Image (cartoon, rainbow, N blue to C red; front, side, top):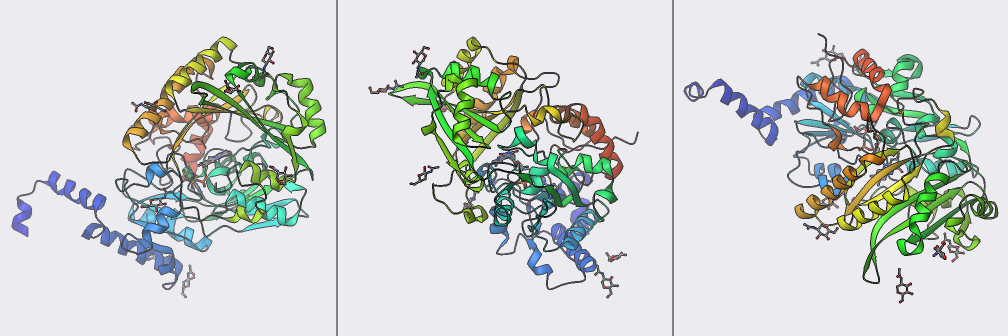
Length: 535
Ligand SMILES: Cc1cc2nc3c(=O)[nH]c(=O)nc-3n(C[C@H](O)[C@H](O)[C@H](O)COP(=O)(O)OP(=O)(O)OC[C@H]3O[C@@H](n4cnc5c(N)ncnc54)[C@H](O)[C@@H]3O)c2cc1C
Ligand SMILES: *[C@@H]1O[C@H](CO)[C@@H](O)[C@H](O)[C@H]1NC(C)=O
Ligand SMILES: *[C@@H]1O[C@H](CO)[C@@H](O)[C@H](O)[C@H]1NC(C)=O
Ligand SMILES: *[C@@H]1O[C@H](CO)[C@@H](O)[C@H](O)[C@H]1NC(C)=O
Ligand SMILES: *[C@@H]1O[C@H](CO)[C@@H](O)[C@H](O)[C@H]1NC(C)=O
Ligand SMILES: *[C@@H]1O[C@H](CO)[C@@H](O)[C@H](O)[C@H]1NC(C)=O
Ligand SMILES: *[C@@H]1O[C@H](CO)[C@@H](O)[C@H](O)[C@H]1NC(C)=O
Ligand SMILES: *[C@@H]1O[C@H](CO)[C@@H](O)[C@H](O)[C@H]1NC(C)=O
């Protein structure tokens, strides 16, 4: 042995051991990491029998199913993607504390996953050896109707939150995302918006308290953490600062009857007039009305065209909605028969694309273990796109072939909340947000190349029409094209690139909070906030 090692240069030895760490669980290196980690967890939690239920090494027969259960982008479900050495699935808060303390002790990066909906998968993948802290067991939703509030744990899904509110009250709701399997942990810490945003703002705007585990393993609530960190946890992304255990939210009032509609127009049916006018109306109309617009190239009668679909939620009845849009938006031609009146929880199911008649408890279903291949990007539009440019846009979309756009109107409550009120800065001055959206359902390197490059081409085409200096982006529409942090020497400069886009003028304050609470940068990922370098 000694003889062999004298033949190995020190560099080679280092490379070799890195290789082991990277590739193999059965290597001595990671065995000892695993053992040291387990020993530490035992010491921290005082329990041995429970540990077997919450610690999954790669050799555990359940490892793969635990890992895959919350992968929501099939692009990161392949065998080449580096897998975590260990997945920890806490059953109680003390397990989270132990996982933080012990990951730090063995020097491993800890990725935090709640609902797993990160578009770039960064809650469960990494380029370096890592662990996952998977929060799905911590998912209680405790409603206090008297106080019109609720404590919701990070591992709960939005569907669970909506369902539990509906069980208790038919006239309360919560303004958050449309997809019911999105997790509270990522969604609320990254802003979170849905079809009540124009009336009630972001999810984050309705958060009144939070509980986190910090880098020292302490549990802190709003009072204990202070207003700076509490500010950062509302839109700054939790994963830079600690593990969010739960949020306390304010419920909002919803009427017993709401109205939804979906109206579609092709270019041949004056879609351009509808889209142009939508830009003026959707961000300015009654804040009880949210009209999302989807734009997509489609083939009709063997002819390529573009379809504009307007999907709406109105917090009121159909008659007043038809009257409102007859006045504000005659180009849409909305008729009473396009409208469907229903309860708020039924509208949640309608927006979630469930079949008509589906019972609300479908919102509790989290065992999908199935997802499409996705690429998403985002932009903010601050002045209406002129008609002649829209015509160029249609031409570009038809040439590319698949990439679609989703326009989400701002205005209303969003214009009233100052950009510095929470860490999420995109407020007044923005007419709407664009999501670039492409999904496909078969694994293929060719398709992935084609579709991601369609997304990037369209993003490039849109440059003259969107926010600049910085070109802003929405954190919850994670997009690694706008910058990646490798956490080496350049970490601070790398952070500024995507940080300014996501957080604009709030970025500096986020860096200050990060530097105060996690100066060693334990809580980090591909787009986390870097601490200020010490020199
Ligand atoms: C199908 C689909 C529909 C969507 N619809 C909407 C929508 O309508 N509105 C909207 O605003 N967004 C929407 N999103 C985006 C979504 O809000 C974000 O992806 C969000 O971050 C997901 O949260 P998560 O807990 O499910 O994700 P995860 O992948 O678990 O986490 C996302 C990020 O948050 C971090 N994180 C997660 N949990 C914690 C925690 N407990 N403490 C600290 N950090 C944590 C992760 O480390 C990661 O960086 C959608 C996404 C998908 C895939
Ligand atoms: C066990 O935990 C205690 C405190 O919880 C700590 O002081 C001690 O160093 C730990 N021992 C080991 C071996 O990790
Ligand atoms: C573990 O057990 C010891 C001795 O019984 C006790 O002093 C300590 O507080 C316990 N720690 C935890 C985290 O429960
Ligand atoms: C991941 O791949 C497995 C097969 O290896 C499949 O069963 C599972 O449905 C896939 N999950 C997602 C989200 O793509
Ligand atoms: C399109 O606009 C023209 C001219 O205003 C009008 O005559 C026609 O009815 C419209 N078509 C549709 C489908 O609205
Ligand atoms: C497609 O063809 C049908 C039948 O000829 C016609 O009624 C319809 O208007 C056409 N649609 C478009 C978008 O051209
Ligand atoms: C659901 O079905 C019922 C009865 O078939 C119908 O009256 C109602 O309009 C439908 N609702 C939606 C949203 O399609
Ligand atoms: C890319 O996808 C489009 C459809 O979206 C298709 O028409 C085109 O042929 C594809 N290009 C390549 C190079 O595969």
